Image (cartoon, rainbow, N blue to C red; front, side, top):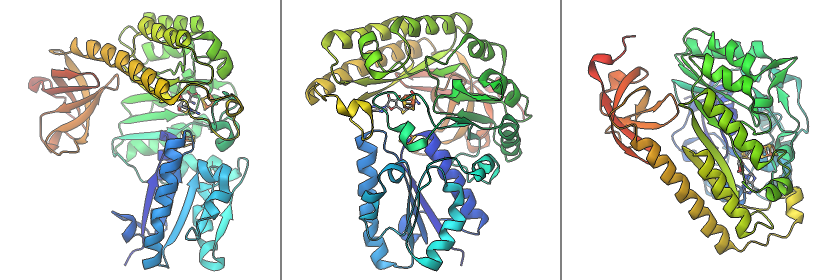
Length: 441
Ligand code: SAH
Ligand code: SF4
Ligand code: F3S
């Protein structure tokens, strides 16, 4: 019987993509996906340490695996990703963990498993890029979604925002050779993928020997079969007019930009070391919305950063009022090891952080609701990805990344369907196929 694997992933899309690659590597070794960790011979926990919450969740998940290991001692328990990259000692305290590796060497998973089998407990944490990393885009991946896939085009980060652990867990910024990105897109298209998301911590700083993100968008859009191209995460200091023009001029590039402001107060932006001002942020959004009027804007925000006053927070609210968001992820500040901000006094009380979080979320929700309401009655192109979790309706996304529940049968899965929007809520639309407009493929 084939051996089985189970991967539990915490964190960002890049981690999801790394897990897909690990799944692909295991499948090329003959492993099959297990529906639960209990049934697996290799269990991998791919961790995130960006805030205390995912970090704690990963630790409790690892802790719970002890029971499984007790019943099935031959199973291999592995921990990978951002947590061990920086805190291997804490992971090693769990005696039931057999393999620990980091963010630079997950591509070495087959060799590492061999070592566990021969030598027992294995730890390999590297601190810089390895030659195999270049091959990462070319190895097999097991796709979470058969129609929409990630391509990691840039790894690491050089910016050292004072609150952020990522530069410590992912190392220095490096871009993947454009030819490899295109080859990956081509390979994915051959497997039936129709939409690709180009991933980078600060993807608009993508640069490989002079090829920038806009150039890369042109190159990937030429791949036959790939009908939609998205990219994330943008950085307000790197986002520029050339990228906005690429969104406007290339049909396949979707009008959706995730451009996290973090704060609307210049004083806080400076303490965060973000490298732009509130005015520059607003100016860029204006430029984007002028060039691409139907663009959807999304952002991340941190509330309760050390020293954030009521006035600073009001400036964040007013930035949001001015820019108008379709989606926003609001986080309460959480001090992280190794970061500069962890030496600042975390002096905004928990209740205040929580109140600000709710107030900002409410504002974004109202903006999103209003923008979605205007879409009722319109016809939108939706890529149907599958059934919704309840299984009663289909699920897909518009070109500007809005999730839509669509009435219809499984024959529409994997198709671009013209959908008439019938209902709206802040972050969700509902619709039905505009029958005569269903595209033939
Ligand atoms: N590279 C991206 C995203 C980095 S992590 C960028 O620069 O925007 C994703 C989000 O987590 C960040 O945008 C930020 O809003 C949030 N985040 C990161 N560190 C945090 C911390 N210490 N406390 C709270 N939120 C944090
Ligand atoms: Fe973290 Fe800042 Fe780098 Fe984003 S740009 S990954 S927030 S250090
Ligand atoms: Fe988390 Fe690492 Fe991604 S810390 S957000 S998994 S880069």
